[in-house]
Amino acid sequence: MFLIFNTCIISAQNLQVKVADVGAGLCVIAEIPNLQDSSDPYYMLYDVGRGCLDDINEMIPEEQPIDLIVLSHNDSDHIYDADKVLDEYLVKKILWSGFQRPDIGQWNELNEAINAEHPDELINLRVHQLPIGSTWVYGETYITFVAGFHVPPPQWGFSPSEESEYRNAGSIVMRIVHGQKSILLTGDMIGRHETDNFPNNGIIAAEKFVVANRFAVPIDSDLLVASHHGGNDASSIPFIESVNPEYVIFPSGSNDRYGHPRSAVAQRFLDSGVLLHNIFRTDKEDDESHAGHWEPDGVTGVVDGSGDDSVIISITSEGVISVGYEN
Image (cartoon, rainbow, N blue to C red):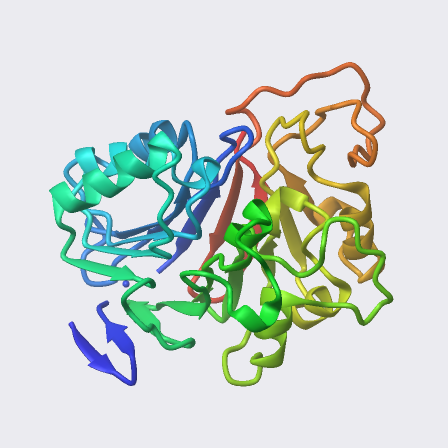
């Protein structure tokens, strides 16, 4: 392994990514085959929500190391099973915000596990300045740090008293490129306020930041895992147009409290040219009876459980991408 301009070169053919249905949370598992040894692929996790460990165990043999874990931010629905993963697997590298949340048990358990397991490399944005555009290369797969902060920059205007938006705004954003196709992972990044009724050019915070820097650090992607489970505080029109995805996944789960994904968000993607049959969701056929919840099939009276609507993305080294439900 060696470095070239913040790029870590290792070595790897077809990329497989699972956006696991863990209910109200996020869990993304990537298997990156190794060209030099097909029996020894690389593995990446992006967020580890509750129930994620079961999907990880199905996809990653216990004797295999996990090469990279990225924790977008420290809400429990994104880190719930992370300490269990550290207990079961050898983890080579962790990238996280370092935002301290001793108020929740999951953060304390994760922090203790990191201190106990001592991964080969820990990148904590509280103490490390990781330049945007920093890229790790595993064979033919490029994984790029697009954005992410320990706390949101003060010029964004978020106050710690705005607890949820303050934490979400600093979410770590990553872009995976394989076979000249790309996937953008956004965590709970912010691009609007929940109740904003922006004109078409309205955009704030992290989405404004990545759009402004898109010529230095590209964000255009074939597939977008939409931010904040399809919440209306993200997916602004300028951001959608800059990413220009062909496929969109809402990792929404069953979530009566927030009604994700929101109809207004789905409509912005549809208005921007994303085809309805290219929009996937981990709460397929869920009817939450929540004002503003998106349910294009008109299903009523159905509560969707977790584990049955995981989405599988496959990209060949020749750049052929396929997306579909696991079941």
